[in-house]
Length: 142
Image (tube, rainbow, N blue to C red; front, side, top):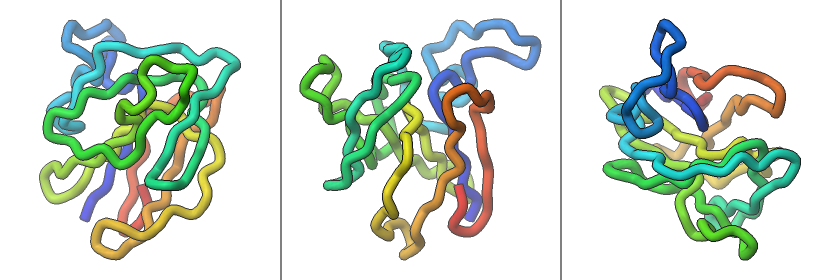
């Protein structure tokens, strides 16, 4: 099973580096099964998120995700933010695999509970200052 991860700002530009007119995630909208109409640049601040009962902090950017066919697996959880309770990370079946959309860049994540097919997902998440909106992997890697 193929697994792909996309993150905030992915799909915003075409192969010629021109901005697309579609709602974010632009070119990846069907693949990710969601839309992003609002977002916040976090600058040097962080936003609380929860993956089930596991707390974490999002950094750099916060897309306010509107799932269409994607399933939320993490939510913003921060009383100071008007979008607290909105999905932060989603999972969506696509083709023979799954697409994970990260609306924010989680900092250090504790080990996550096993889910989907009994596998523990692992993610390569770009750190602040690094570019790259997409990471791919096989098996249990994202």
